[in-house]
Length: 173
Image (cartoon, rainbow, N blue to C red; front, side, top):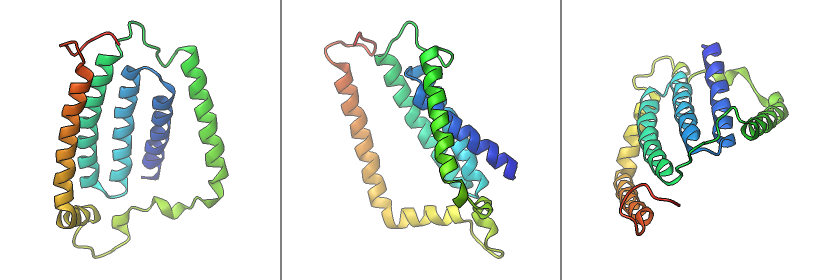
């Protein structure tokens, strides 16, 4: 399990580096989907199966909307890929930065942080993530519904602002 978590975390960091170093929305959206999948894998490895599923579905739905808007507004005939020279230089710079920062915090890293939460209780009846969802709906159900309404209204506002004077979704910016 430790090797799987190590691979997931390494892929997560490299996916974040790939998203941060790429100026094209096409490749950055693919990197964000990869990062979301690997992040949910890390959550599942630590015992948050339901939370990982909900996060993956919500995050991918939001990324689909963001990708549709960015692809419609940034119509590049020749987008820069991960193999181009400027993107490779940014990727190398960010990777070296991540290595230096992780080397700075290496002495405070402990092996006990790899233990999932469900293995800390021997006779637990409920899982930790399902209890958290119940508490979220009990204490913040009204705020959750208000937030969903605000996000829906923000979607309509962004649709009207990006439409402008043209009547199609694709226009020259």
